[in-house]
Length: 120
Image 1 (cartoon, rainbow, N blue to C red):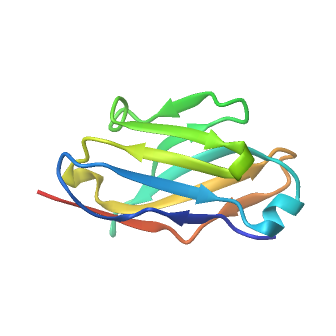
Image 2: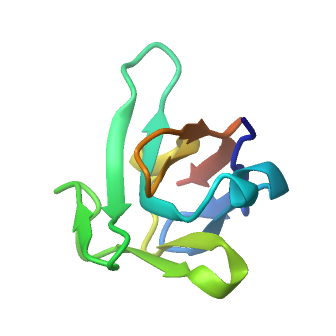
Image 3: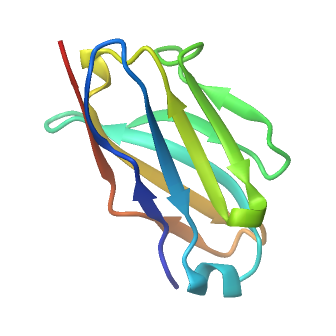
């Protein structure tokens, strides 16, 4: 079925920025176009938290905790969705996951996650 590949995580000081990428694998592309894409994050010991999403038509939504600081966008020609994270805070420290739905609704793809650490 394939999976998405997240990248771009790292260690940054509070107030800094990171850009995460969620890229479709070859097998995903062969299954047809990608529809909505969701970003989640998880802190060890806590439940997974929805962060942002972008529809096939590029409509975006954000959790209240990141609205105004994070921006989700998609580059369809690159089969990639980005999460630009600005003014990062220590509370943003987590493993960030990408979840992509196929436009057909048949497939649901997850990645392995990418670690983001924000130091104070």
